[in-house]
Amino acid sequence: MRSHRPPRTALIAATSALSTALLLAVTACAPTAATAGELSTDNHIHRLVPSDDGQTLLVGTHNGLFDVDAESGEVTGPVGEHVIDLMGLTRAGDDLLASGHPGESGPQHPRGPNLGLIRSSDDGRSWQPVSLEGDADFHALAYDPADQTIIGAHAGQLLITDDMGESWREGAVVEPYDLLATSQGLLKTSFDGLSISTDMGQTFQPIEGAPALALLANNADMVTGVDLDGTLWRSTLGSEWTAEGATPGQIHALTILPGGALVVATASGLQRSNDFGQSWEPLAP
Image (cartoon, rainbow, N blue to C red; front, side, top):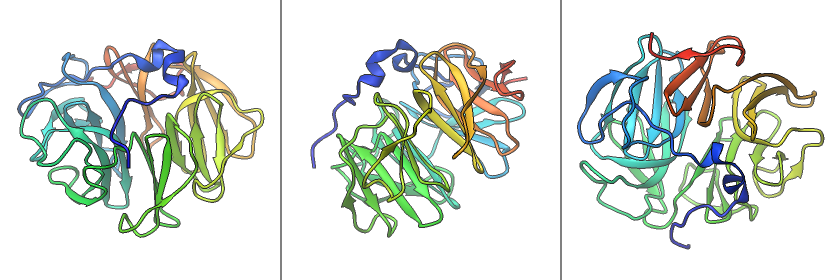
């Protein structure tokens, strides 16, 4: 297994909108409370993961995991016993799955440089190593609840496990920017466009007529994506893609709350839209 290196995909180099480091309103060294509109230069936002009830948003950053109250916008963190540079972060039932490296400040995870697959059953307060510790750094992680399958992207290769990380097999040789498991198959964004796998990451086929998306999120069978120009698209897979709104500037992370609201990470903090990108407001009141 090769050691960590930055993604090679031309998708990131193709637009500064996706390579710009975005910042969260927190201090990196100790738990604090702030608002999501305040900025600190210490944190790049990598992933946004809502709780099942939509009350809390978990924010994975370059310097740890943070809790954001979805109503008040109050930020708490970094949470947990270790500061982790969370590159991949996704929910698997009641657990969180993640990957990355030790962070740059605060109490460090004891192993590195790559953390492999780690798992938390308490929303990131503590993490347990699962497998590939020291070897893999999954910049993208997807979990398919139907098959209890985890797919991770590391160093130009998809790795797949259907026993929650006890054993792995190699999948397609690709370097995606984003992965999303849906009821129709595994979606992948890359410089080559949007594609889908119906064999859990072994092979991919392009989705004809789909826009060139970079970031993906879904709410049930409705998939939302952002293209390189910041246009928001959505589709029930198998139907046409419709452009309906736009992001409020450059973004680096996207999610959908259970109630349907969009949340994005921008250079001015976390922004929320209740009308699919026609208007935006700070997540903090």
